[in-house]
Length: 343
Image (cartoon, rainbow, N blue to C red; front, side):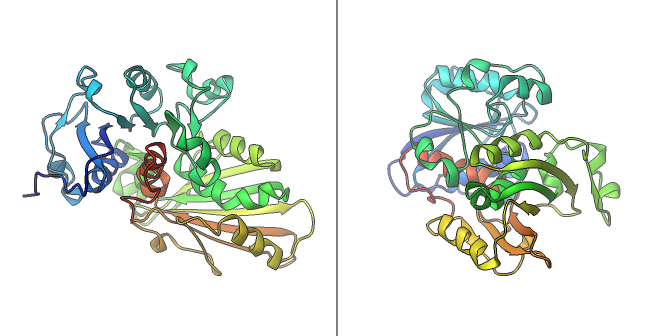
């Protein structure tokens, strides 16, 4: 039996609600808040498994709390919330929590795209478009200063996290004149309700692309790369790996001008010198290198004829690609050390 007392190290900086804690990312978020030395886990909610304890649903997370139905009247007592709902369902709940004054990190796509017509093209009608303008895109390595003053954070998708971190130094230097992003994720990236396509008989001993004609993360990746200065076409093709967790983005960049390998490595070293959750590697990383961590591990090189940069980035899709990054963002919003509870 798990110890029912949360192991706080000091007076909590905030009481935190995790809404949607029965999904993969929400359950991990609850675990990370539970083990955080300065965040009190005030409540964990689930529509489908209310009444069950989280350590019965996910024994590995060791969170001895009962999942309850979301009650916004009780949410008046929380200071912050992590919302792990699907797109569309998240926006109305985020709006109500913001109305109660809670800081919110939203794990859905509802506030990631700054252009409303672009959101509606990919996702359908928006649940609360008035909140779009004030949302901060939650990639700390790009938006740290804005996150420190944010009240609503749009946690990036897992594929965009890896792809944008992989390409940010090149894009900011004006070197990207087109890119192909060949990305592979473990099955947990599709969520707990992934459906028949994720049945073991379809995934085991198999490997295939999906949504090659247009994945919903493409506009998010394109939006962030364009903001950094990238030009040219962006091609993004995701693949499903027969593994549980992990994501590798292999990026093939058409360079805007000639550059040698030493210049490329220097760009990355300078950009990420002070980033505690970025590791630069000489060889291409693998997903096992970052499993159960909030690390993004990156390598950069040139192809054989020197015309393209090859950038590889590995993350754990449930950590840096979802719940771990949510804690990183929440730490910044609350004025806590950015890595607290993640190492």
